[in-house]
Amino acid sequence: MPKNFHRLEIWEDSTPRSPAAQMACDEALLQTCDGPILRVYRWGTPVMTFGYAQRLAAVELLAQRLPLMRRWSGGGMVFHGDDLTLALALPASGVSAAGSSRHIYQGIHEGLLGAIQKYCPQARLVRPEECRCGPVCFESPVAFDIIASTSKICGGALRRSKMGVLYQGSLHLPGAVPLEIARSLAGEVCVFEKPAALESAIESLVRKKYDTPEWLRMR
Image 1 (cartoon, rainbow, N blue to C red):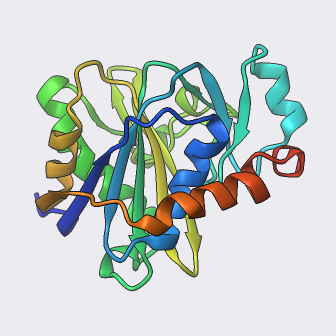
Image 2 (cartoon, rainbow, N blue to C red; image 1 turned 135 degrees about the vertical axis):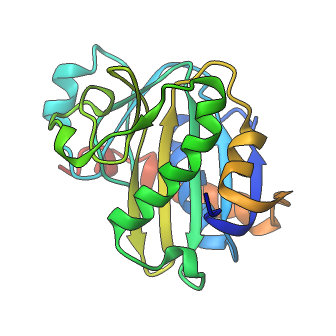
């Protein structure tokens, strides 16, 4: 299968961050990148993220008192505990950010499937006719999500802006190796060298956006 990218930088980010800082980091990555970058990270404590367009009141009814954080991307509610969380930043200047959102989402998951099938041979993409609507991401597979038998193991959502495209995804697959995931997407993989401007961009987004009640309660 053709690779999504000729070259991809990978960042295995082990820095402890608050939920607000995790989301700010994903967005800041898109603000500062000049080529495709895959950030892979985990959460220190259980958190429920939810889609940009979801209403907080509806989310709170299902969240079981978990800490909540609104994402910049769309999609449904995602429980983060033992999952491997992915953020793929695609700058507007690159060919990889062109095309429809559906085409980009399909391409990313077709690439990820190659790595996932090494651990889970029965994994496959969800067909459009198998979609189910619902507020909880991993209970409601959409086209091109990745499932094994009847269980969804990888889902995500996109955000498009003038800066490019941000993919935010969650992978439930014990033993998954981030470098193998990156290699399934690109012909050449190299380690991300964090620019000095990134941390200040993260801090600014936390302060002005993600750590504010206005962001959490905007809908």
